Length: 239
Image 1 (cartoon, helix red, strand yellow):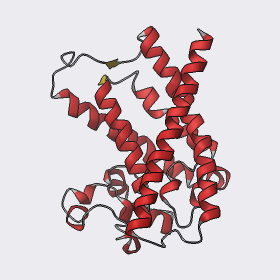
Image 2 (image 1 turned 45 degrees about the vertical axis):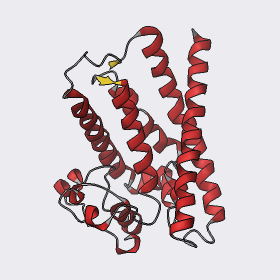
Image 3 (image 1 turned 180 degrees about the horizontal axis):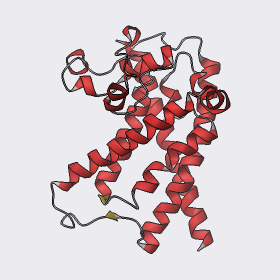
């Protein structure tokens, strides 16, 4: 049993690490084509971002691997595979529930990370990326990585979700984590400035957090920022 858990954790660590390298690498390549020169002179910073991110991949991979073993061998999670186990309308609802709960956790732990003592101890690693690049999405101190690594593994024990929707959650988390740090806005202006875009976080919103620190704390949605008065809108530097 212990060997199976270790192998599952190692496999998930490898998957998370390769997913990071592939996704960040793809958007870094896109940046070089769309915004040539944007990352000029940032080679040393990018190496640090990759190093911290690979450490984070292990921290994310271990609980994910343990949960995967629990799901496959023990059936302890609420992940399901049968399409008719719940009504079809629950599929998009479960996706939204996961994203909203993850966003809620991220917003409040992110604000906590900006308390000076914890910022200096942990979150400063992430903000050392000035400006952030596509490689900075997982560039976290281990303390911060741990706060992010436990969310989805905890939710699968509490909220039922189809395995396909769980995969979509992880895809959205990965893509938004990378694109929000690219330093330029990949989404069209009509979407970013639309009624729906006014509630979504993209690079031009998160860039302002990296510029000013004490605002725009959310991950997917601007709900908590708006409710708590920490939303300061978009950064003109990344539009």
